[in-house]
Image 1 (cartoon, helix red, strand yellow):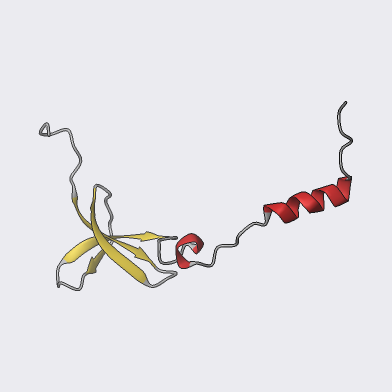
Image 2: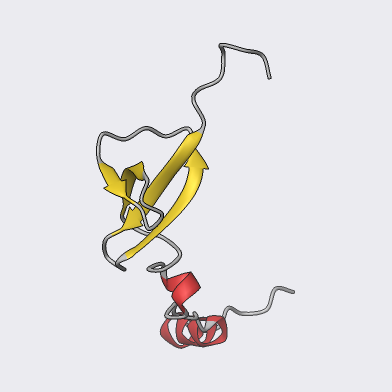
Length: 85
């Protein structure tokens, strides 16, 4: 890497308060708040609203859309189009 042009790459804790979940990774993001991690070191912490612990896709609570039912409901509501000849 070329010296002097890249931002500092350091360990940062990301905390999802909704799911009471935190993880430590390396990032160029900066934060003013800090947290004492399980290893006893102090790291900057960034609070996030959604993480893999609270996102419906990852937790298995995502709704599956029934596309066939939506097409049938549309046809009932507006009727089937006449075939082009």
